[in-house]
Length: 208
Image (tube, rainbow, N blue to C red; front, top):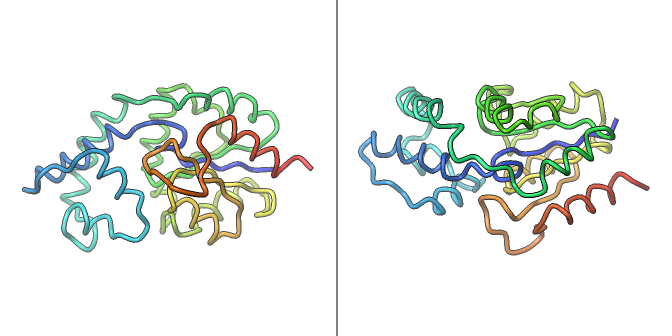
């Protein structure tokens, strides 16, 4: 069975305002100044930085940081969410011909909540988050786990995302990937600009 895995934030849905507000809530409560939204979204997807250290000044996320993050996220994760233009139509077209999954570094609990709120959850066979694995993207564990649970192979799988963490996770798992440029990063090369082009690329891979 052919499998398409989607990142969530910045790929399926625009949750940038909520993510930036959550990180700034933690920062302010820890005594740091708030960052500008676009700066946060650029850095949160950068695989070359330690996210905990960059945003909160610690090598690893602490219980206090996690509590603050989840406190704000739980109350606000359904605010200011938008489905990117063309995404739901694409999912409708793909659903009958492919297995579909979400591979997100967000919590799977919140991801399910957000997707249900936007009436997208039923399109997906699986929704896995950072809490579904020991090592999130760019580590390939999440990709491998989805393929194993769907019972398919890397040759029949594709990962779509808006960050280099997604592309690295796919590469590390030996899976083809597509980088999209409507999310939180502004890629100068190797990224596609709209859902119409994404659909063409998907069928180019799977329809021989």
